[in-house]
Length: 145
Image: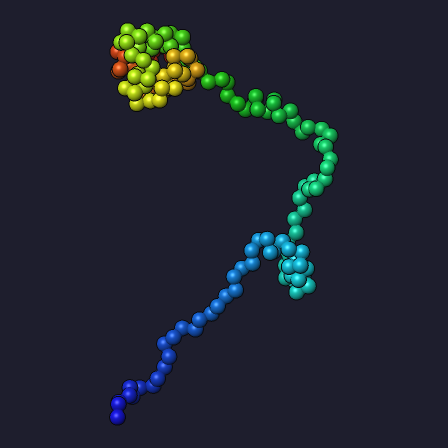
């Protein structure tokens, strides 16, 4: 006959509790669900949106938006000075390089070199330093400030 454990038998299992999944947001907005919650006494939050569903024009603009933007925006950003543009073009042509070749040597896109030569770029000291190394021309003292 097999021997059994002489001590008291106990169960070491934890009880398992199953929970229902929370209802989705769409289901909470359903009128039937809202009415059911009101009937059962559950708290229901309602929020009225300002001018929601109204087809009215605003009669007076609160503040001229353009004036606000102009007041808070800084002045136009500095662009590449004419002397810098000409120095880049002159040095590049003396070295018989195309814009694409210069861009490749300074690890930038061709569009960056085009913007610097056209005066559309905002001067970046790091890019100007790379151009100085490759072209052998001083560019950073001429930023036009």
